[in-house]
Length: 141
Length: 353
Image 1 (tube, helix red, strand yellow):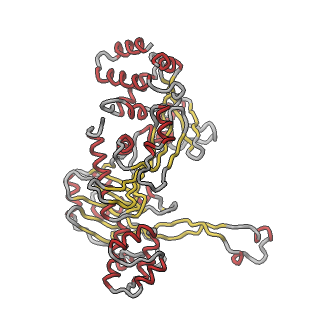
Image 2: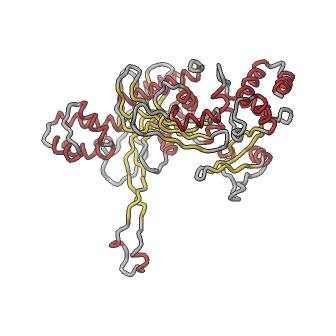
C-alpha cells in the first residue's frame, strides 16, 4: 500500500521535487506511529520527529492538506474549538468553518449555540488518520 | 528618609524569602532565619546598607517575574530610538522611584526613569494596575437587619487593590538585536490585563518617540521555535512543565517540581514511556529551568515559561514568554541571551538535527 501511495505522490508532484521529498518524509513518520494513536495529528507533531532537516511550517501544512485530499485519503481534516476549561474538543462542520472564514455566515458553537466571536483565532485545525492510514501503519510493522 | 525597615517592607511585597536571603548573603549582609530576624539584624545599619537594599529593590523591579515580548526593528529606527531626546515625564512616580507612589490616582504608563549601560538603554515606565483579591467579609459590615441566613454565611468579596507596575522597554545598542518589552507579571489577574498593558505601553512609546514607533517599525518576534528547540535539546536546561496533546487525542498537563536539579520531564519515566508509545506529542506550553549558565556559574530560579495554548499547535505563533520568578539582573540577562540564541539558532537551521 505504501508503494501505491508513494507512486501516486510521485506522479502528482513530479515537477516539485522538494514538496515530493517532504511528502516522503511525512509518510515515513506517519507509518511509524502507533496505529491506536492517530486521532489527533498536527503538522508540528510530525515535524518534531522528522529526521534530518525540519520542514518549513507552510510546506508541511501543504503536505498534510494533500494527504487529506480525496485522492490520498490518509488523513481527515478537522476544524474544532477547544474548550480550555474542560479540555474538550468541539468539532465543527468544515463547510460552516469555510463559510465563516469567508465572512459569509456566522459560526455557531454547536455545544452552546452561541456565535464564535473570532473564528480565525478560536478555530483550530487538526488531522485524524483514516482507516487507510491505520492499514498502512499495520502493514509496515 | 528611608530606613532599612521600610525598604525591607517593600522587598517583602515583591520578593520571596529564600531567594532574597541568598541575594543578601551575596552582599555580605546579615539575614537571620525570618523576615523579623532580618528587620532586627538590619535595624541599626547605616546609609550604605540602605543603599544596597534600595539597589536590590530596583534590580528586582527591573528584572524577573515579567512577561517578555521581542520586537524586530530595522537598525536605523532602533538607532533613532537610542538617539531620541526623550525626557522623564512629570508624575508622582518620579520622586519616589523605584518605590510605589502614594496617593489614590490611577495612572497609565509614564516614563519614570531612563537607564543606560554599554549594552542598551532602558526606558522604565510606571503605571497602575488593579488586582482583585478575595477576602472574607466580616459580619460587622453587614446591616443589623440582615437575615440570619446571610449573617451566618461565609461571604467573600473581591477587593480591588491598586498596584504599581514597572514595565520596561529595552533598546539594545548592538545592530540586529531585538527590542525587548517587559511587562510586570503580578500573581493574579489584573486590569489592564497583560495584553492591554502591552498595548498601553506601546501607545505611550509611540507618543514619546513619535512616528508611531511600534505600530509602523516594529514586528513582533515569534517565540514558538524556541519551544521546539528547547524540548528537542536534552542539554537545554531541565523541563519543569509541559502541556501537550497526544496523537491519541488526550490532553496532558505535566509538572515536575521536586527541586532536584537532576529532574527533567524529558526523561521522567511516565513522560518517556508515554511519548515512546505514541511516538510524538504536540507541545504548546513549556517551562524550563536552568541551574547553571554556560560557564558553570550557578543560577537562581532562572525559569522561563512559554505559555502557548492549543491554538499554538495550529498557527505556530507565540509572541510572549514569561520569566516566572524574581531574579537578579545578571540571571535575567542570561535567560534573555539564551532565549535569543536559541531563537536565532532554531530559525537559521543551526539547531536542527
